[in-house]
Each structure stands twice: as structure tokens, then as C-alpha cells.
Length: 134
Image (cartoon, rainbow, N blue to C red; front, side, top):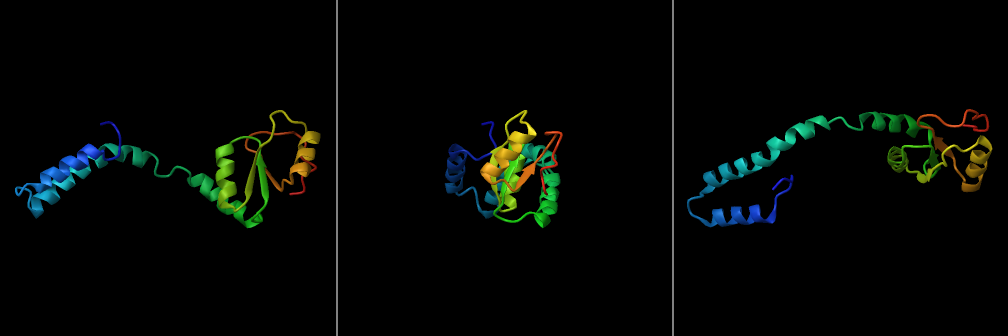
């Protein structure tokens, strides 16, 4: 089988087993618990490992929410998935990522042309950001 969802064949087998009078209410419940555990136990380490994934991004989103106007246009220099996630939860429009190795002059021109209100700078960007007002 190899996947974490119930296949049609397993559901069919269970339905056929439950048609048998041997599987009264308690035996049916026991079989369903065993059936459930065969899927839950192997998946539990993966669930535990990813339990707090994204917690930092969520906290960042809460901080940004205080200073970001809904409906604003947002761009980023890298990390498109994270930027898109934050833009969505801030009720803003994500306009994409900047070109790599863009000059400050080009970046300012691009912001004005595209109406960009905020730029997420994830690692490093242009060294001179004096043209940014916020």
C-alpha cells in the first residue's frame, strides 16, 4: 500500500467483513480500532516532527499585521512561498520576487511602476535602501 490514505480496496474488504454475522458491534469496533492504528502509528513520527513547523512565520505575520495596510502590494527578494503565505494572511497582494542582482535605481523604478508598498528582504538585498520610506 505505502500511502497514508485508505484505499478503495481496504474499504471494500471492511464492508464485506462487516456483512458477516461474526462481526457484532464490539468486534466491529475492535476491528476498526486495529484498522485505524495500522495507519495512525506509522504516521505519528511524521506528525510529531512537523507539529511546530511554521510557528516562526506565524509569529512574524502577527508582528507585520500591526503595520501593514490590507490591500497593499508586496514584493520580495527571495523566499517566494513564505512571502506569498504572509501576503495572503495580511490580506495583501503578492506581486512576485524582484530580479536578482538588481540595482537600487532599478528597484526604486520597479516599485513605482508596479505600485509596490512593501518589500520583504529575506537575506540580503541592495546595500542602499535610503529611498524606502517605510
